[in-house]
Length: 406
Image 1: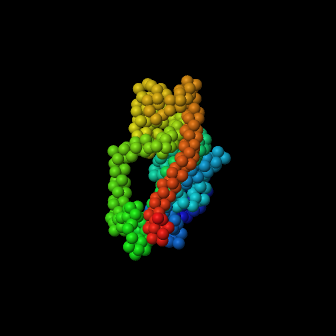
Image 2 (image 1 turned 90 degrees about the vertical axis):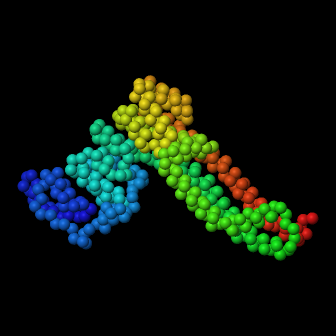
């Protein structure tokens, strides 16, 4: 984007002038024609007028925008549109205030497309960061004249989805981090501390207890094969990443993660909460059930759940109710399926799905809290036990030689 100065005449014959942030002179001419202005003079920007940030964004050198930037954009656009600000003006206002260079460029491109006559949904679809769920809901909001309400619901949905995914990630990261730190501590002890104590023990020339011999053997193994162990671990990481990129590998990983103790329940219920809230948001926007399920299939990251949703969509197309399709999914609780059934009978499925999502979210909160309480002491006991064995093995010969043990 760059600042182009222009002078022109509108339909009433009035002389006008101004400055616009556009990608090229061609885009500026299109923008002015869409506003009924015939350009007479266009002054391109000098090298000092070029927006360095926009140049970096257009060449892929700026940090890409993510869910946080999209949620901020959604909230502010909803507020401005509900306040009666025209869409194009709202986009221009947001473009001027946005600090993320990639998001700023995307909003600028959206504004140009809208000025040329495209719908917001069409303009959003051209940008890589807005998924099909977002674009379809905006499309429904434009068609129904309730874009501000839809954007507000989208912002709420994204906020809830971010929180539930954050809880799942924290549930996975915390124990992993504790284990990694513990393993590093044990590795440092075995490769640096134990060898120094071993030198002191060997100077005594006494017979070593079996536990000391075992620890020394493990220490020598780590010290002699550290590079080999590191290479094996690196190769294992690359192998896992390669396998996860394949359809079969991803399906196997997702299937195993759903069956894992404690973690599996968190993953399943977290994904079901996200699915229920997503489906509710789309149904409340007037999107048909079949189309809403198609979008859910595209947005669900778990391969196993996406496959089950394909079966659910097929059942709906064949004339079955949503409840009949859900009860066939083994990990979807029967009681919750009955709640959806009540919603179908009363014609209130979207609101009932919100209640279902809240049930799952509460269960995830409880599971994460209980998991933290249960796993933390287990990890501490195991790691502490390993450290205790190492220390006992090293100090036992010293105590024996000093007469501390008969």
